[in-house]
Image 1 (tube, one colour):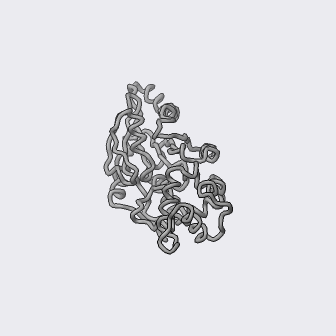
Image 2 (cartoon, one colour; image 1 turned 45 degrees about the horizontal axis):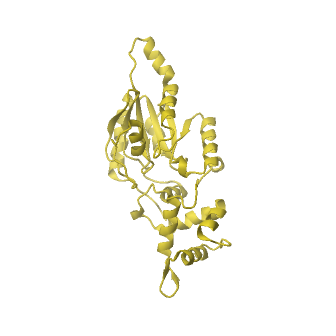
Image 3 (cartoon, one colour; image 1 turned 180 degrees about the vertical axis):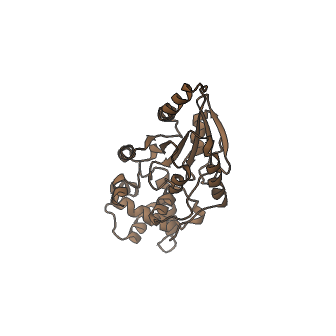
Length: 286
């Protein structure tokens, strides 16, 4: 299965981001803490060039906390400032402002030495669809300014948003790259909800997700679906889940579409616990 999704407004967003770079002090790159590498858009590196950057691992409340710590250490070792946040609950908001000021301290000291009056930090916020940019903006601004939703592709235009007197944010639509070189990246994005379900084959996504759970979170899989043992054959696993959760058709036949929908929905709503779908060592091995 090949997963591609690059609506026209995303191509436009790329051009708009490039045009606004001269106004920006720092880039807030928002990623999904469950897939910190796969939810980073390699196109962003090309676009923002050498601008200072703060990497924000959002939805940290949904991710495996042990693995999140490993990712924060990994990014630090590679010279990238990173914070784990939960924009939905407002956790980590103060640290964003503090860290941004720390990163830009030298620049603002030089401006002060030249007699330039202090001003708010101008930040560009970028990230793939459905990673929580609008929710983050609303939390930082302490009001509902940006439109939010649980569907990717909500934000369609750029807008400047004041965050008190300390930060001015430029929001952008979510940008996915035109082609996934690694199809597993597409599967991870689809599993966590970054790509619209209407363009996907959910059975393929569920197969990927279940195989991942078999290998990495077998106890969570057993407990959620009351399995004594996890079948090696994926069809048998679908059948077992179907029987236990009533995803059956007449004649005792498993409704594989329903099983797929169930598994993906329960992963996204944390019914199988806090999950992270990649580790720093995976990236090192690649």
